[in-house]
Image 1 (cartoon, helix red, strand yellow):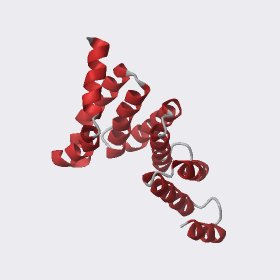
Image 2: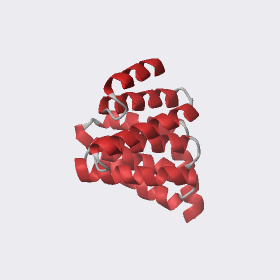
Image 3: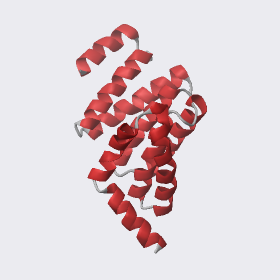
Length: 170
């Protein structure tokens, strides 16, 4: 894949939007295979290309920010991830509207991020905002929205959230 990218870059140039998408996709693949240190520079490069080519407020930039924030979160770098995800959310809300699935994704990602950082009140704020959005977003059926919550159920996030909230409020 890297060889294909190198050939492609030689042909289209280093600032091409299709190249940014290909770089982002490779970064996502590396992240999915837990090759995080290899994925991060690719995700940062895709973000830089999209920011330069599309401007700072484009939905593709929000996608790149969200992808990079998820990688940072998975490496425990919550303080670095949060401002990127908040920026992605702001871009998506302004450019796509508050009911768009990308907005729901961004809001939904902020809950676990706050949980990882140990902020029970922030977790409550983000999860209470994301839960109502999920069934409404783009007319998705409730079962599809429930499937989107399955990772939080299966990894114990919701149970840990209840414990964290109980210890904070109780």
